[in-house]
Length: 88
Image 1 (cartoon, helix red, strand yellow):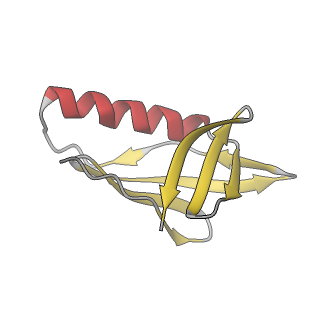
Image 2 (image 1 turned 180 degrees about the vertical axis):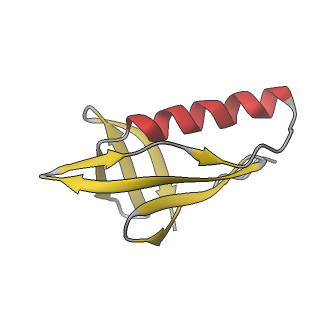
């Protein structure tokens, strides 16, 4: 199975494991908006089918502009649409 984790190692970043690579992205708040910066990732080789999931996750994370709490964790939204759900 594939594993994707999302953590906040410090106040200015998000990071974790996505399929077969570690990633991090700087984040900052501008007014009421969350701004997600450029992607830094390891470049481990993985199965092409899994790599497509990894690329999709990285793209979705780059589009996130809002974070809100949910009953089980957090939801990350892009233009008002939930694109990633992270459970504790």
